[in-house]
Length: 142
Image 1 (spheres, rainbow, N blue to C red):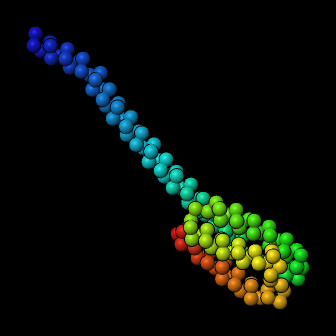
Image 2: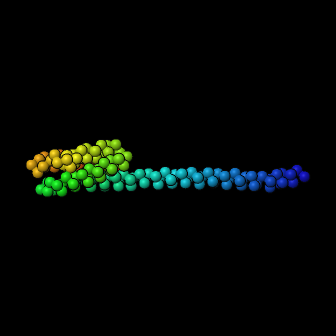
Image 3: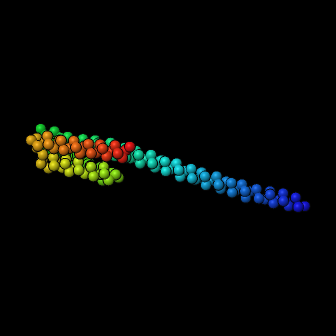
């Protein structure tokens, strides 16, 4: 009779034990999903940084045609707007500051402060700003 009670108790305990095992597997699966989501978020952040740097490098490489002052100003104003929007979207503070510095420099062209006579000095300073963007992107990207 005692063996029968033990057998019945064991049979009744099986669903509980199976439920506990399933619960543990469920928790492991949930942890695996969380880990996968974290990895996906990290990959997305890497892509976002790469995209921001690509756009920043493109915007920072702006060099107007000073031989056509009206067109240089119009092109510069469009680039000022692009740089401002890009800086506003950029999460990295150093890159954001680099973009704002490039924007201020390009703003001088948009306002007509830089003419063909001063374009060589402006271009040299602009190249230095471009190199700062490049340096920042290599730091945050690597």
